[in-house]
Length: 81
Image (tube, rainbow, N blue to C red; front, side):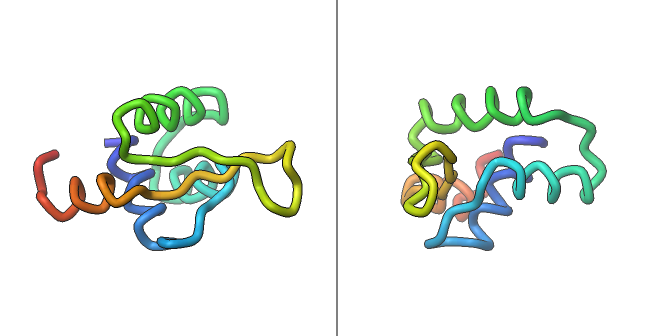
């Protein structure tokens, strides 16, 4: 459920990306209890599956932004979750 909720947030921002802290705030507002470390693990899992891209922010290279990939959009559209 957490991964799907994160993907849905990234879909809403597509094609732009979101910082993990923004995704975390959305998850918390949706009732999920997690921290930035747990979210980082989940985003890395989604990255390895090809559903999310993690890249440095253009403004601050030390910050990371997550964005939905085309594969991630197809996954959400398929309803196979």
